[in-house]
Image (cartoon, rainbow, N blue to C red; front, side, top):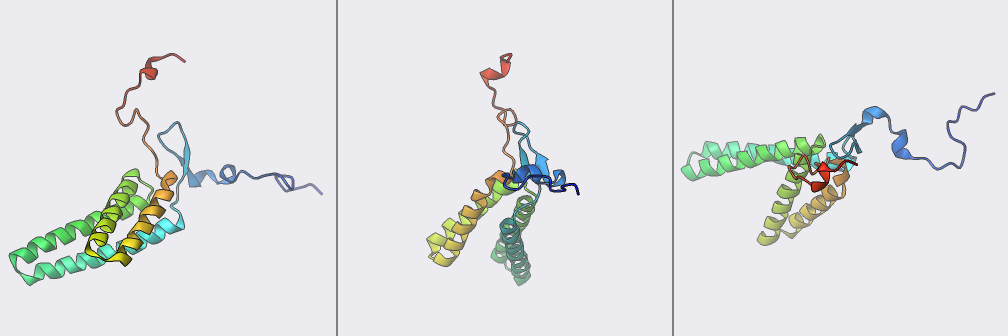
Length: 159
């Protein structure tokens, strides 16, 4: 009976090599492969942030219905921030670099704001989210120096 096991027992397994091709993509840095799917923790953060943004949208609409000029300004700011959060959640979920940078900025700023106002629980949650997103930076493609418009004298050399 032929052995159907592709690798002999005791052989170390390169898990990246065994990942199906449809679950990996190439990004702009020397053809380095990155996974196509966000990790579960990022998806959980995205779902919770989307729910929070949805509640903020409803709060903004409620403020708009109150009618005063200051209420209208506060409503527009609230709705704008909620829309930006939804865009960032989309970028984070789809492994876009701008979603990663936006998430670090938005969650980082909300952590600082929560710390200043004394909401230590919210600041702790924000800090954990920033740390987790940062720890998963390999999922988000890094632009190459050429993509950023940085010229190198080494580009002109014939290797």
